[in-house]
Length: 141
Image 1 (tube, rainbow, N blue to C red):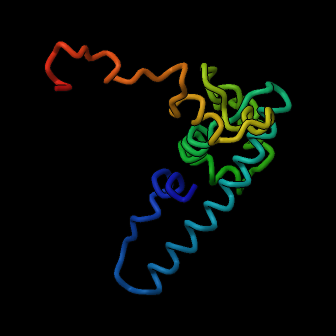
Image 2 (image 1 turned 45 degrees about the horizontal axis):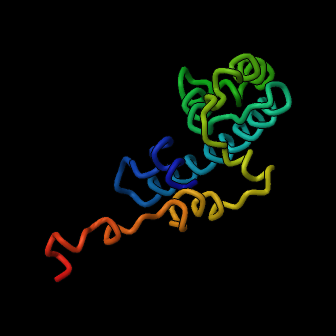
């Protein structure tokens, strides 16, 4: 999760050299991340209850950071929440063949179980290449 915050909120970019200024930037960004986390939680809850879809963290954060919406969230929260609710359907994950993390959790399927189905060879899906080599080819002599 930290990698997503780092890439979307540019935590690594600090302007200035004075320790007080850098500390101020870090605290301000961390406070912004707390606000974004709460906003993402609200968007995810609203999307699930109204559309039965999972909200995309990346889409929600990108939407909030555009057009000074984070400032609107602090200054006029009612207007911001109305805009967020109107845009929630666009901020959901697209339908896809593989299940989302939420769907896997609800179905009780573990992460390693899904990997085992795909990548661990069994007798049914594994053919040994040595079985296909004929003794006449001279490779086994």
